[in-house]
Length: 256
Length: 357
Picture 1 (cartoon, chains in turn red, blue):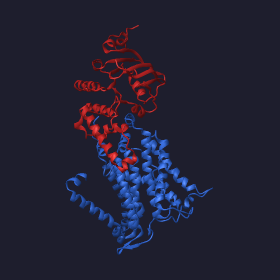
Picture 2 (tube, helix red, strand yellow):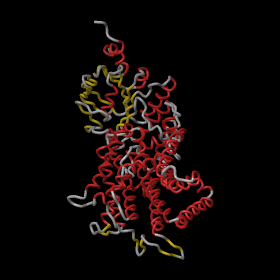
Picture 3 (cartoon, one colour):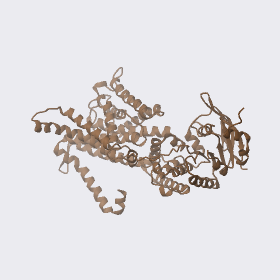
Picture 4 (cartoon, chains in turn yellow, red):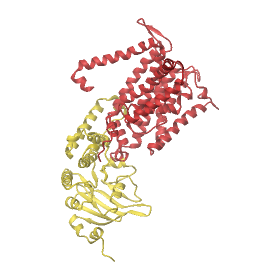
């Protein structure tokens, strides 16, 4: 297998008396889809929020792309090359689909206040490039026909796709998707699966939190299972599925 | 408008020429009615500067600022101190205006820095406090060192002078009489055009998009790699510098400044202009500023004669009735057009109640 892109080392996080994450270590290889699963409240989203800088870890560190990831603010994580989507979709709801993706280009473009006011050649060209790239990404995720519709007026499935397009606009090395299939029907989930597969085929590395076990098992190269903030299993989906601890976590253990 | 320019250029340029002629002729016509109306127009343009500046903070970036008039005060006092007998300094306006804008810009960043984590009501309270601090500071900086001359204010501020053209007296050019206020009007009109262009360009830029993104969802904006701290500070600083320029012009035109001109009510007035006109839409904000500047003045001149004609005597003090009508109009507007008279397209949809989640 190829080299390691992200390595989490002993990540711990507690909220008051609740140990949300307890020394979680995992490593994600370049070009794979890595699934993070677990029952409700297992700490999946907490892990995501620590990784993307919304929370600070109590202990542990991340090594990303060979260098320690200094997490002090979410925008720095994005700059380092980790883009995310949210479990409860967070779009700029009163901006058009196109504008949403254009905001995603913020990080990789540089026009400042003077460029904006003078609107010189460099700024105009950059602006055109931003719009063009945004259109390409909308086409990539399959919602280019909705580019001028306000994000909040998009259908639910399209909002999910728009969020992915916006994340892709930041040119991430790692794309972190937080329950992308939540609330989707079977058809929508199937089409989302095709999109994620296309993303992998185009060389993206994806960290996927998901509830839909069937989707995870069909899609992921490797999965890790969290339960009560601890990693209880890691490996290819077929192995993890047979793991006794995993079965116990999901179905409940034998009564002692 | 761009569409019209491309499809029917002749019609478009005719329209532009007509508007230009109207704007150029306006003070000359108003002078015939009374020079007071030219002064009122000038003040209206100053308030348009303020409203456009505040629109960057409130309309674009969504940060509620109730102390905006403080930046107007900073600009006004910088001008007053650098061009009056108070310190014996008489710098030319093209040096002072940028200094005033810069000072206001710094004040904006100073206000912005501690309030970065606040939003909504909390931000409003802190900015309100900031506005009061600036006013009280100006009121009291007369001892032990007399900097601002306290409540007495600063008098005999140098009027504008460009080359040999002095702005405090009248001139006759080409057989037409140009009064002092009329000359100021042209300068203000030029600055106004620059301010409008800057606003429109900012709105459709990378920075403008980042402002709106922060207004829409700050967490998502951060995750998109936007340094929300810097971008918010930029909004405060940009908005403040427009206030600073307006303040400088105010000093030059009035020739006198005192802390009384920078009370909370003025901040609220500017905010009303932004909200009434339509937050986020540059043209709406301009309309709001002009409306709220002119309507009270119109009422001032019509309320008294109207009462005389109807009842034969004055029943209600014009000032009271004026504010009454004014308040009622604001309430009605907000009731029937909550997004403002001329809202930005996205705000319009936001308030239309057509939700889908």
